[in-house]
Length: 95
Image (cartoon, rainbow, N blue to C red; front, side):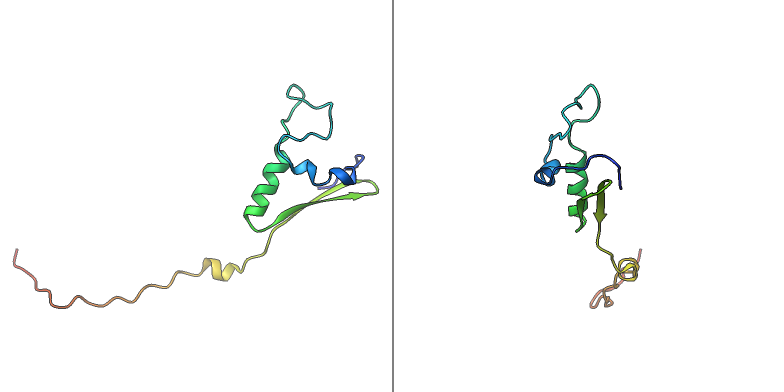
């Protein structure tokens, strides 16, 4: 995701992921948000083995979500069926 805003001061780049942190003081509960969005998004990305990276650019900020690729063939392959052996020493009883 890219925007054309002022970016984030380098010293605040990690701090913006802290729960309830707001870089923009004009935002409050009445104007929207509680400061959890980036914290939750990063937690989800990291739970899946990825991360969110923020990069200042000359024309704004870029937010990149990186997630690992998985081998879909391995993920979709059926689980091996355990080998079964016929029961031994059992007899059928008449009903």
